[in-house]
Image 1 (cartoon, rainbow, N blue to C red):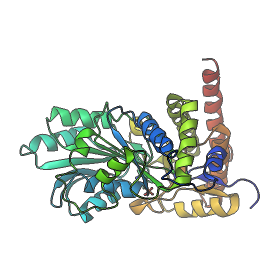
Image 2 (cartoon, rainbow, N blue to C red):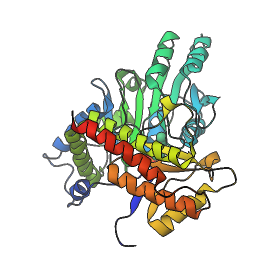
Image 3 (tube, helix red, strand yellow):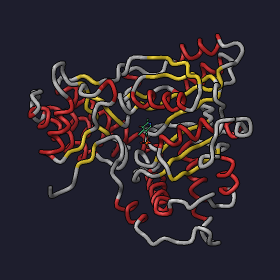
Image 4 (cartoon, rainbow, N blue to C red):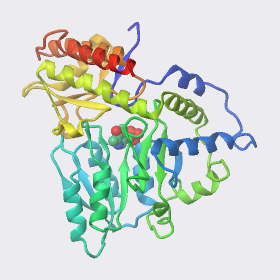
Length: 394
Ligand SMILES: *Cc1c(COP(=O)(O)O)cnc(C)c1O
């Protein structure tokens, strides 16, 4: 199909031309004396994105899923007890990863559309007087449901329970796009990947680890080779890696970080929330509901839209793709067929979103879910126009 493909899945996201150009270059010797400058700058600048001074950042040729595994195997031993919340497909898979590594997971099962409950986490930890629970696993932004949990409140609950468990946060669809405060929230392991807020192709797993988290490496008995953070740390201190780094991706990450800093992280975060609000106003104008239950938890990076009972969200997605060159996210796991997801993360602006929303309207009608053409677009336009004027007058 001619023209631009409209990529509105919540990852992979649009890769800016500047990042593509930065990646399109000849290979070079990663053992040269000039090379360490690049990774050293990346490690330091990633800390700014994570909101940490004391944490240590790591870059793997991998994806977010691999960073779940890396965080767990470097700090825990088979049989260790961990506490996790399940409220969507990604939190489900994080738990599955922990179980398959031989950890015993106490699962708080919630409705898909709810957020992690700080009070229940606090109660369970307070009841664990032997400090048997070694870790708490939370997906910050559940990409399957469009729900953002309050990590600061979870940290407060953990502290109130005076429990020493380590805090593991999956920030794959929040870090570099939503507010993230590694030091303030006292996160021990924060997991990210390159293909969402970082505006890059998939291929890098990113990790930030606290001093307390790193100190677990010697006692942790889970087997690890490729993921051993001790090997990484030793080489990273010299500006190198224990194996051949993904060079093109490192150059891409340099360009992506430069772009994020030029816009300013506060502006990046505000832009995501502003774009998200326009999407939600459109959904409301269509008379449809979203999966996220509590407005305080509405995600700035993805909105999962429920289709009416008896309708198939997969048909909306396929029609959008085939007829209108628009890629929407599908319902994952138990939400398959029930929701379609509009990703609004990464390199995006108002008019791109309006184009996508107009495509969604046509696809909804085609799939037998009648909406008034232009109704959602108009609602989003009104919001973008009004809020753009506020931005301009500042
Ligand atoms: C995308 C995503 C993942 C999986 O990341 P991959 O890079 O595909 O392995 C994990 N968690 C969340 C919250 C995600 O959005």
